[in-house]
Length: 361
Image 1: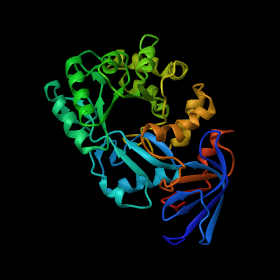
Image 2: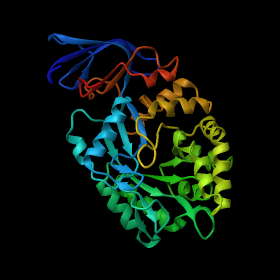
Image 3: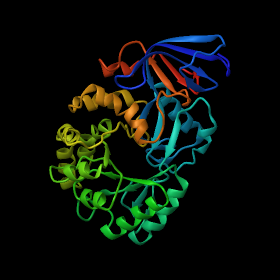
């Protein structure tokens, strides 16, 4: 279809979990519920706003930054899975060129990871000491799209286990600086130790959050701190533990414990009212295009299907400050053959993908 074709989308348009309309139109790349005079190409099915992957890394692989051609393949893989809005949770690559592409997902960037010296994956992060944390958070807040990403904990080789990376005073000052600049802060956290300090310091979100306990879950709920569990990534913990068993037995045992209780942890957080969102941790060592698998994982953890769906659709978009299927919004939507509210596995087989009002897949 041409760039200027009008698209008529009909069937069951899920404007919200229970707000179902019969049709909408895509005109000049925008959604309208008013019938235009022009002739239209018709697409039919069950319609959702473009899915959200709230923890994804475009421009990154297991070795570090990648070239633009590889970044493009990553973005296309996510798009073809129905992910049309990405919160890029840390990347050393400059992917601003994606913003000029009408056929690729929209990206909200958190800048480059900020990690403690020699306490993260090589070639990924700014590796700094606590005295420089405020300055680097300010730098990435200015470069990003309203988010900054910290590495909150990682293996400490001297301790032989996961430990917190940042002292409380520096974390408080850094988060305050990000908020002053209008950015939210999130942090990679596997273990238990760093969570209370980060939340009490004012953090907005925690990635993975496998270390949540009955002591810290109420604190997250009280402060409204979101989690993005990345369960498709947590599934790799036993393999990682096996690889480190001989050199770091304490760390290996810890990773296995975190893995074993992963579903209980997520369900307890959800039951307490902690906001939970879908993220795959694609990039690094994990494949792109896993959004449907992550939604299904949330249901395995005991989250009701409609809420797992909302965590990658309407609620996720609202949390990131982006519209869903609204009058005048960018026409980014996915069409399915069956009702995804009845069975979230439907998400794995999109019938049509529409970006900026054009059918791209």
